[in-house]
Image (cartoon, rainbow, N blue to C red; front, side, top):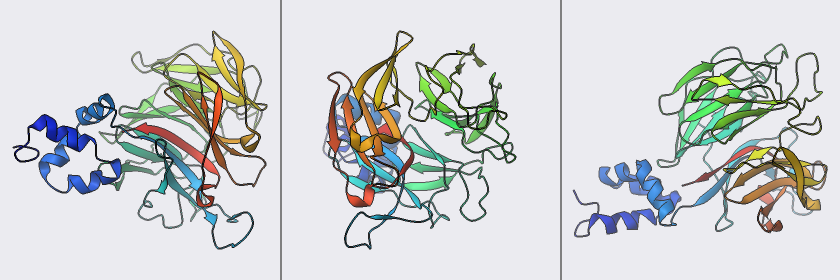
Length: 355
């Protein structure tokens, strides 16, 4: 059956490829053929090949009180988080529909990852019970709908590292249990199968660690042990999914013992982090300063990288409105992103997705 009557399929495919991701849910409801086509991985690859894809940044971001008529928008006493979307091409901001059953916002400290055309929200602190949650929710960008995933197995955990391979798997590592014991366990969530699998334990306990998927491996950075409680370590270790084993611990991975939340990886061998007002790059096993942070974002909340770009979201001081700056990693020049007041809330986590 032709995708569009009286048009060759290659031209019809070109037409569908140029439709904005916001219209995917609408066009998928037109007919089974269109729904099947835009759901295929080949469709997304074709959008990239023809430069029709859209670069999106998704963030778990606190709401701001817009009822104030003057001055700085007020933050709620208990932050209420939602998922916001920044379209990097147009600079347009928007918000995803809330997760069913969570009218008061996302769980605090939940983690957000992108897998194929889907977003995965894992864990966090339940705002009703104030207990760690094992919940998993998946948002399908094609249908613009949420579904409940299989709960994270094992005991409840908080402040774990979380990273995606971008294809079908989300990894969880470290964090702490209900008794504040730091964990060395790790697991993988197959989004398509809705299945969890345990991984070999890490060599070290890692509470409040940072996980990034870098050069084909899961890299888990820093954190601290149960006995250290808040005293961050400098070491890191990487998991090879193909070999199903952890590599040796790199004892001095970071130059200083600091919170690793600003670490971010790119497709190349470089890693980046923000430290003491600088953007640092790990090149040839040495951390080098590549750019000075703009004063508006020196209190860093979130960092992500993609295709030669790095975005930093933060504020000048604690409690002030958050804004974002984009760094061109080749020229090392900053561009400020226009941020409406309603999207100036604190950012917990986020992910980049090209679709």
